[in-house]
Length: 179
Ligand SMILES: O=P(O)(O)OC[C@H]1O[C@H](OP(=O)(O)OP(=O)(O)O)[C@H](O)[C@@H]1O
Ligand code: HPA
Ligand SMILES: [Mg+2]
Image (tube, rainbow, N blue to C red; front, top):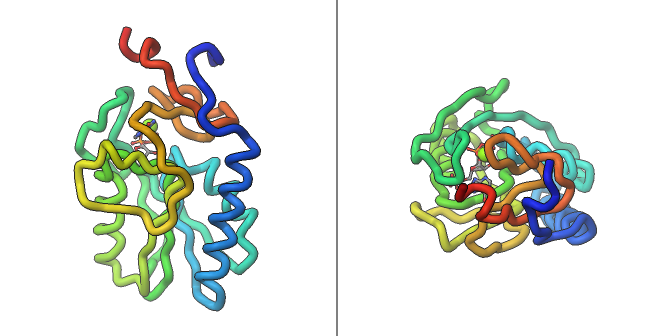
């Protein structure tokens, strides 16, 4: 991992307090409900791990693995399911946990897919929102940070599977992928 490839956008403390704020809001909104958090692999795994530890109501977890970027910084436009949920979501209150909403193609695809399974509700929580790049009409119900149109890595988020282990949320310098 080359630290020179990135520029820090949000440091550990800023992320920690934002995650706490989101978790408090979720805990209030879902008090007394049957909350199932659905993490979208792989990008959301770090956010999911931090978020659940700040939520103070009973929750259950499941994961889905979808991919549309592959080894590129541009969406292929085709969302592929690599792993589906383990359990039925019928009559459950589902909260989809995502790291980033960019074109919106991934989240729209997932939301439409889950709605067909007759849950009681489906809402979405995205740590990062890049509205300038949106191609489809979708917004998350809970948003951490609204970010500029830059390619992000770190805190679980990759470029060609690398940089996921950087603890901060960083901008990947264009010189790295414009070679
Ligand atoms: O709004 P969109 O333009 O669809 O982009 C957002 C999605 O792209 C990334 O996943 P990716 O497909 O790279 O898979 P990964 O999570 O395994 O890295 C990210 O984790 C989101 O799921
Ligand atoms: O900015 C990004 N970084 C990494 N993966 C992504 N997938 C969509 N947007 C991004
Ligand atoms: Mg990716």
